[in-house]
Length: 350
Image 1 (cartoon, helix red, strand yellow):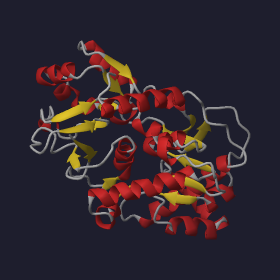
Image 2 (cartoon, rainbow, N blue to C red):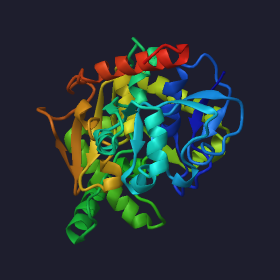
Image 3 (cartoon, rainbow, N blue to C red):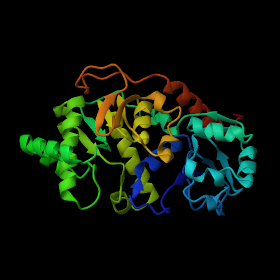
Image 4 (cartoon, one colour):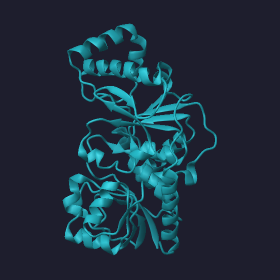
């Protein structure tokens, strides 16, 4: 029997590669006795014709629902399974439901997916995300002093009053604003409107400094987990998996991580690094439907119309010396996922 990982490389994405997909693959890889190759999650599942293999089927399905259900040569373990609202009609079709019934119970990454499957007669349960298990291999007892801000968000409007405010901030703190503006890992604005980018950077600087303090905003390491550079710098599945591993090891040694990415926030829980999740107010359903059951695991700062609002009791500024401890509720989910994967690989009954 071979063992393979899911990959996400063939589906066209104007933003480039989301390395969070490979963080999910990294979590699964902890439990495989070997890695015999990769199967693209969106392009290769239905037409796979290689050696029979076992695959831990965690992740978001499917950007391309025409390539579903998977080949009978794949023995799947469905945990951390997500059906996005945009493709639910395809994944809840009669052939798909029949396939899922053959492999139930289905462990679901979110409550919304679990409820959809249950409504269609599929035995399903909330498993949480596989990235919660990353402490199996990557937890570090040596936490450093470095802090990280991973894909922060600023969703305030650039109306007349905000432009005036941004101009004032830039004039009062020109060196700080310029340093952030030049940071290629800080992605607050896309396109070639450099003035708008500068204004958003200034407003970001002011609001995040209010909540987290200037030193945290200026001295944290910035990371973006989705970018075109991942396609060119890491052209193979193996190189992207290795980059995902490097990031997870980096987060494992951090003092504090602030992020809008669930596949940064969940791994930080798994490796027991303090993390604060940035939740975007007024987000689209395709994004919010992923979070049922997961958002409750985090300490959250909501970002709504450019205003940051901690959803927990705190004093300001929030930083690596003044932040809430992670919640403990994720640990039970992680332990159950680990046992499911071990049983799947060994052939024991789940």
